[in-house]
Length: 115
Length: 180
Image (cartoon, rainbow over all chains, first blue to last red):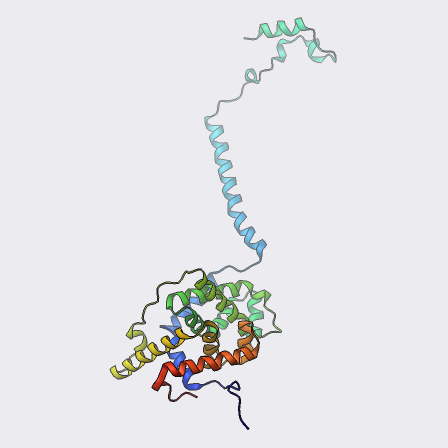
């Protein structure tokens, strides 16, 4: 029976030559590097990847916000009632508690009293 | 332990199991990558890239299918991508010290000549023939696994191996006297 050239078996001699030529230097060190790279690589789905990305940034944002608040508290002037722009005390008491709007002259006199 | 069992354990997060898979298939992957890229450093980078991609995707590996072609397809694709992106370095001849491994001068010269001829022979082959030849003759893979790796019919793989061997015999000349 005639065999087809496509009925192949591996050729040990050619295989040996190919392995000799292609294995490359320091195979053990190469495998060790691969194992270390895999051990050092994180595995996980896209949510883990996103979570890993977000966590340090949230922390950095919180630290930055805290620092800015501290700066504001340290250098900023303390707020005083006079700075609020509302001089409720100078209005007549009935204008404050009344459900009706105050008269114009009452408002004008209150503004004139303001320092 | 079978590859599929190790892959299952790796999928459950066991890096040692994946380490064993690297030990089993890492050098075959390196030879295939070197056959494609023909440069030590590029090939090693491509294998590492492929192995890390496989490690990250191992929980998506279907254990009903053979592991070796699944892994090798990832590595081969990484090597092909590296070449397509033109990321490869200029190929340099391998130093004699790499080939020698403590051999005598005659044997060193013979090994260097063999490497040179094999390189020249592989360089003449179309890419897929080169991969098929290396996986079949060097790694002892069956046609079916190579077909699954290259995503071609088995008959095409047989044809690749046939033509690649014929071309290699021609290039290797007298060195190929022992070949089938």
